[in-house]
Every structure is written in C-alpha cells, then in structure tokens.
Image 1 (cartoon, rainbow, N blue to C red):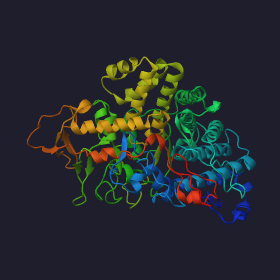
Image 2: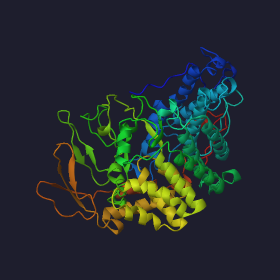
Image 3: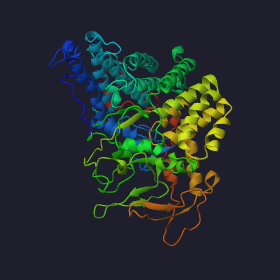
Length: 599
C-alpha cells in the first residue's frame, strides 16, 4: 500500500487570484517551527518537500481535472462522447470557453499548480538559505527534488496555457498581481533549474530515495530537461502566430543538442531500460510496481484513494464486479480512434495492449463478462482493473499513479534529435530499440529492413511521428508532440478522413471486415473474437454469434474538433474567467479567446 502524501506543517500561500489583504503576504508564515530550523534539518525539510506533491492529488487539480482532460482529442485519442456538446467536450474540442463550468473555479488545476509552485518556491528558498545543499547530501537531494517538482508544474502549465505568469520566488504583496511572462523566459529558467537538479539527485537506485519512481532521480530530471528543450524549440502558437522561438538560446541547434546529450546520458547510464515486453510494462503499471530502474522514470504518486487514472481511462466496467468495487460505469471515458487498431501491423505486440474493443457488462452474481462494443467505441487497454493487484473499493478514485515519463520517450527524443543533427543513420539505433520490443517475430523485416530503408531525414522523421503514435496512444502525450511538429490540424484532418474511409471500408481500410464473430471463451468471462484482423471474413462456425460492425457516425467523426474552429489557432486552453477577473487587470486571454479585462 502506498503511503498518503505528507502535509507540511508550514502554512504556504497558494496562488491567490484575488486578495484583499496584501499585508498578509508580508507577514511571517505561521508555522510550528521557523524556516531556519525546518530547512537545516533533513527530516523536517523532507516533510516540507513532500508537501510540494500535495496539490497533485486535490480533487480539482491533476486528479480530477487536468489528467482526465488535457491531451484529448488528437489523431489517435478522443473523448468517447465527443459528439455530445457539454462542458466536458468543450475541454477537448478546441473551442473551450473561459467560463467552462468544470474548470472555472478558484480551486482548479491552474490554482493548484501555482499552489505547488509556491510550496516549491518556499522550499527552494529555505534550502538555499539554511540547508547548505550540496551534491551527495540529503539536503542537496531535497533541493534537486524541489527544483524538479516545480519544473513539472510549470511544464504542464506551459503546455496547457502557453504564456503564463512566472513565479520563481515566494509571493509578496508586491508580486501578488503580475502579468503573463513570455514562455521563453520560463523555459530557459526550467532548463537551468533541471541542469542544477541533475547534479544534486542520484541515478535510479543510487540512493534509498531513488529506489522508487515516486521520488525524483537523475534519469527523470535529464529526460524532462530533454522534453522541455524539444518543446521550447518547437513550433507553437504565440500571440503573433505559429512559429519557433526567436530567442537564440532556444534555437533548434542548441536545444536539440541539449536534448540529445541528456538522452544519451540516460541511455549510457544503464540505470533505466525498456521492459522486455510491452504487456509486462503495463501489467506492472497496473500492479503499482514503483521499483526504479525499469521503464518508468517518474510517476505522480497518488495515495490509494486519490488518483483517477483507471476511474477515467480503464477498459469500461458497467458495474461493480470481480475486478473492481470502484463503482458503476467506471473507465472508458476516452479511447483510441477506431482506425488506430488497423494502423498497427498485426504482428505489433503493442496493438492488443493499447486498443480494446470490448467492455465488462453488468455483473450477475458478482461476475461480469466481456461484451463487444460498436466500431466507434474503443478503450485504452493500458489501464485495466483486471490487471491490478489490489481490489479497489473507493467509490471515486482508484489510486493508480500517472506514469509521467518512461524510457521509451528518451529513445524517441534521442532518435528525433539525432536525425536532425546527425542524420538518419544516427537515429536508427534508437528507433530499432523501440521496434525490437514491439515485434517479437520477423524482426529482420519489421525492424532491420524497415529502419534501414529510412535513408533521408524526412523519411526518418515521418517514421518517428508514426512510432510515437504506436508507442504512446492512450498516454495523452500526443497533443504536445503534434503542436511542436506543427502537425496538429493536419493530423486531425487526416484522422477524420481515415474514420470516414473506415466506415465505408474504402481506401486503406477496404479489407477491414464488416462483420465480427464472437463467443464466450472457456473461462466464461472473456470473448473469443474472430474478424478483428484485416481479411478475416469467413464465418468461423455456428458456435459464434455474428455482429455487424459498421457504426461510425458522421456526427461523431466531425466533432473530433469543433468545425467552426481551426485547432492550430486554439492550441491552448483559455485562462479561466475567475482568474482573469481576480487579476487586478494583469491577465488577459490571447489566441482569439478575447482580451476582456475585469477590474
């Protein structure tokens, strides 16, 4: 059982969008102990640093608002009821309103992220002032952890909102109301901070703290630094249009080199690795194996009754059953786009793990059985109650962590950066490593010949874009990647065409069967399905039940994104109205959301 995150004894100041008592912010923080005592003592300081993680688990923060919604809809993932326009679908259809009823609250993800940043700022100030944090010391580790956790909050604010206020010191009366800063300034600070953190924290299993992926380690810090370097130099929407940063420090040549160097450090360290089997990776995840040194580099550490990863994304369970007591209609809020299963090669071992065409029906005498969905509804098989070691009994949460970064991303970033700087031959080994795990048979064709044929930068880049899709569908990492590649609308439009072709069984989907055949397997729970694979059209026998598999409504296809909107001009969420209204005129919305200032 995972331990509940500790709440620190210091009363920290969260991000207050409005405050009538500026004197409060200049008053000494009320605490049972003075900062000089807390941050000079490793045990007390650890309690304070653990408190930086508390906002991850708040109901309207990552747990119930940010993770369930950010990252949908893409060319591989969508909200499964995207055709029903409401506050939920507005968060994913690129026409989000600033007064969205799910988000427009003072305790929402925006506020909770800044609360985490404020906690980190207090810890960083205290450790620097009173802790003498040096590499190899526990206080040094805690400073590195604080810097990295602050970078996580900022990284997610940047990808969801673009330009945001920069707060790298605890709030005072002079800084309670500040405008947005250029994201370029923030990216540079985070890259600098993570460089410092990398010198302070050990590699995975280099200390007791880094034996678990609930704690920050050097491999994660370097990988996050690489991810941010790629994002900072990528194409993205600025208030004046889609472009790369004009800051010379964030140029492609500098940032790609930094990313490649960091990824190679992680790879050469030997302290992280791919799991030998893709299915084993996700079984371990659902079993809540947090041992460091494998594929997971860091996970948001939810307590058993706080996280909602399976609650939101798991294969659907219609009722409480033999696998979960989390409640009725749990999981299945989102899933892969219907064609994704058919874009995988049939031999790719990632396909059946990632894309699931069935749900668990209503239980009878406590036992539920698999039931085949219609073509338009798939689930993410990476998240499964049936793979858990615990039997979840909480009614609102499952407690399974968010797998925030894994080693496979390090390999793909290395491939992309090496391709750009050194050419496709330098990228090839990293791409081959990914595909070697995916294809356990016929590697001569599917790995060696496939990758060796990628002899131009363009061909290699396109292959990396595809590989990212096959590797990360269901992890909600795709949206930011499409944005920095300037492929968001192009890939969304391509996805609409693919779904239309799949529905009509034309073009690249002409050989996809229109009838499935199924029966209950010997375990009296699972389905034995024939007809999922291309070309499987022969009736397998009278013991099977036939199901016409054509339903893919044009309305649902069209609402992958709001038809009145160009997604390339709505790459970010608006800042919610409550924070604009309480900003004393300092915050405005860009990107066509309007510049209303409420004083």
